[in-house]
Image 1 (cartoon, rainbow, N blue to C red):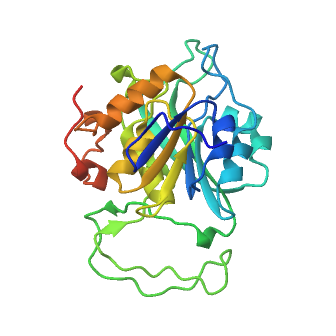
Image 2 (cartoon, rainbow, N blue to C red):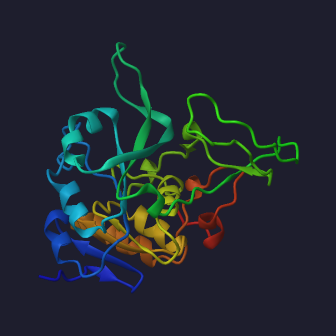
Image 3 (tube, rainbow, N blue to C red):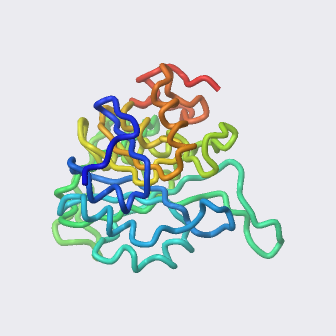
Length: 275
């Protein structure tokens, strides 16, 4: 049965319910998914891992598809079986300014979270678009092609053209962004700067991205600002109402989501969101 949207404006559509029940009724096929599931690591009533959600998402994505998933190392180790049939692609690291637990002295204070990219099909068939970093240390000339190192594939070269930018690196995509917990929208909200990078990486302009755990709607906001379409699913109506309010606001950009010293499509798109 086709689900009834909780809210839609033709670009972004929000459904209320359990993603495992809503997904089979979708009539549009997303090309990629950006998900922030409950990790199942706390005693909070909302922090319960929904068994089978990865399979449900996989059923609605195309044969060649990308799945970005936030999580901790513990979560991915404990739930590795859920990702059977998917291949590891890459990971990005979000560095928080304020850590979270533990309060004891026998463990490190965790100040990071992982986002792992899983994929199926051929890697080269997928959309990839990291926003390149501006750099000033380049010398203005292109290196000559060099022979590949002994451990690399035959014929590989490391030639590059200096255009004042470079491809982001895995430990900067360390994505630096302050916590947005002070906004009071969702207990596990991710900054817009963090989520928008993953939406950009996995979807071309105009494509449809899926968020099965919409939370405060950050993926949906990022998709709109980047010129993508989005489907979000949220099981708690309290948060669904917040998502609708956020999407309907004239100014959608979080002040604390702006990476210092960079100019992104997200930043340039709209004015700041009022606190």
